[in-house]
Image (cartoon, rainbow, N blue to C red):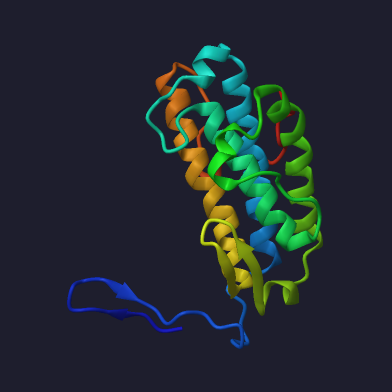
Length: 194
């Protein structure tokens, strides 16, 4: 794939096509990112558990308002994407109300199981499942969408990282101390859930 530098300084690349013989990503990427997801979620949930309910629910100016609201949206989004990949159960309700889909008790109870499900999918995904197109109905767009599967998996993990970064900033501002987020410092043995 070749990239081009435009006159405006922007970089463009041709859109990946399902017919491309090379996958954008492979199973090793999925396993690494699933492990990173688990590590980071444990860190954030441990830090958030040390806050009061009022601190977790305080509107901190983020898109999904609060620490809990952003974690709820992330749970909803992960379930939605993962169900497209593994055929398992997805999230209930509308994405527009995803910040209120899960209360703190539900997040604490269900996040470890969801992360285990993500890890199991990543451990088992064959390379050929990361090629071709994925088609689904997007409630956000109100229509069917079809995109390369590899791109969808990248979006899944990128979406997690984006919102966890927001939660990390809100936790730090609230006085909590989540772990570093750098991939290269991920421990070999993941700590237990809080």
